[in-house]
Image (tube, rainbow, N blue to C red; front, top):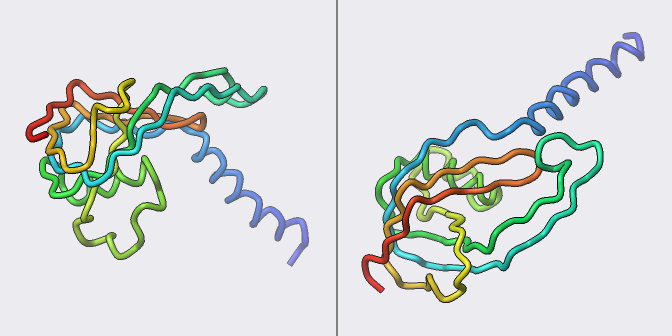
Length: 151
């Protein structure tokens, strides 16, 4: 086979993969979810410098607000498929292949909040209007309201 053709067969799929990776995340409609906080890690505001020539938000200086990454167990309100998608959008390595056909034991949520004492392990919470968006520059979430059901 012609060497140039072989290179083309390898490079064309890589080019398409790069285009998909740079695209914005597909819309993730808001959901309401309840559960028990198994773990709540808080992160302060982080400023990221844009990269010249990058598209989307990656090409601009941006700030990621202070937020929690919450591991929510005994959750309700979303299907197993939605739970997998939500978790993988926050940390694509959090679930291995064994959860492709089963309900994950937890969901990861990113909840913006400036107070590092707002959430802690053992709380039962309800998150209303949780949605995920993003592009090559990062992932961000929105929440209408977080209710603490049982502190």
